[in-house]
Image 1 (spheres, chains in turn yellow, red):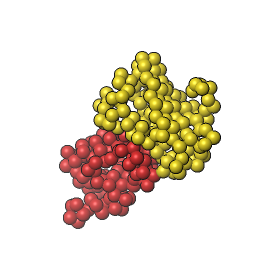
Image 2: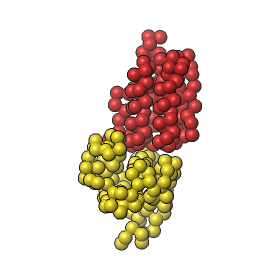
Image 3: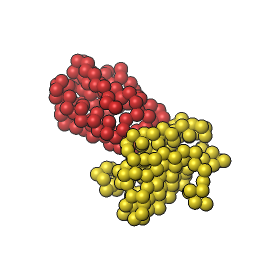
Image 4: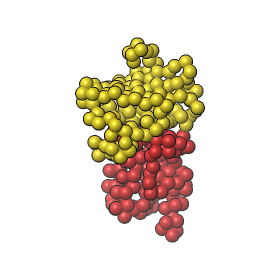
Length: 134
Length: 118
């Protein structure tokens, strides 16, 4: 099943830092509806914030898709058609950054994810994160 | 959305009112660093009670803010980190390193007062 055939509850186009806030607020609201704890909803919002910021910073535009399954798992997909991540493995190491940051964004998201996947090439990047309820 | 900065004796208090964009956060950092000299400030309190999320950019910007203000000769304390925000920061591996924190505005003022031996 491809990402496009899934039924996404929320689709947030990302092209500015204001959109980063909209995306994380939508994520928090959906997590609340799915009965994630307020702490986990905040964690999900923070993860979405990292992923959406990377879109703005590295690709300019893209989108955040949020999807839940019948088990209450929340799936976050961040995708763009930007230049791609030159070295996705390095991008997951704490301290690695090409932007002058501290490189704690993606490694942090991977730490909290139950499923984490990056597909990146010269046509764009898709990051998939799944978070289940404890 | 600009963050209001209040002056109380020799302390500046920046009270964040809502979620902030990256640009707003950087604007707050620059405004505080600037105003430390304008008002000959000894202490700065940043109240983040209303901040919905502290992610890697926000934690880095708060750290930078405090370090820059320290280089200007004043002391910063971050107050009001909510329990859920603290939980998420720890899970994500984000820290404020050596930047002092306090429970709320009142404790922040007490902390700055104690440091100056009041």
